[in-house]
Length: 152
Image (cartoon, rainbow, N blue to C red; front, top):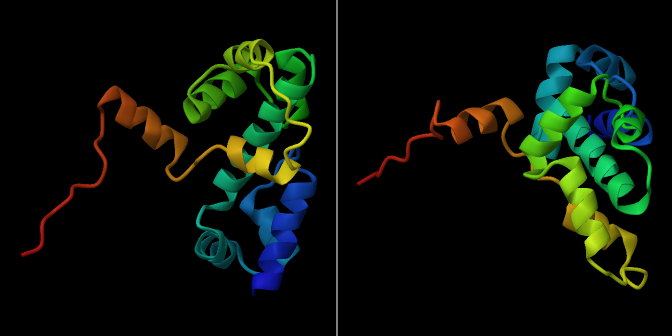
């Protein structure tokens, strides 16, 4: 089963700018949609949609740091259909707007040529352990996280 999941994950890695609904991923893996979604989460710790979101945000951050492309072009190149959705989701996940990230990176003088690319990607990878909508609710005070209960 892991080999089938990795096949779908590799497809997402290679074309994160494309739409990858669970139906399409399940077809690539050769399993049912429900079984795929459940197994993917168990194997990789996040649901397929959140994994794809992480890939897109990670790629957008790299393009913001390394290129002078307009933010709108970066949004569309990384698979977003709307600039507004890209900006809102990016800010919710990363904590800063795309333009703020770009300005901060340009102001900082880094010599990152000697650092392996895999380390740079890991350092800039967004952390999506909870859904973006849940994160928004927590920040506005609408819903608190799971209650902690003390067991005697």
